Image: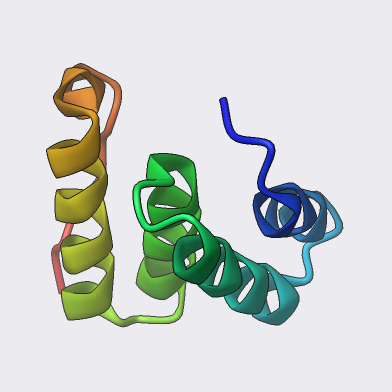
Length: 80
């Protein structure tokens, strides 16, 4: 688990349903700690919610590169 303050801020923003802030904080978390798989997951989920399928897929793929055992936990659909 990360001690990244931006990751924590992103999680809090998600709970408060402030997706823009969560997106910004998740990106800062990745800039601070490039192997922070949790930040990639958060950013990917938000990207998908905003209709950015390519960005979502890239972030989820990166999260799986960092932590392959997550594959069984990640679910989702990229249908139009």
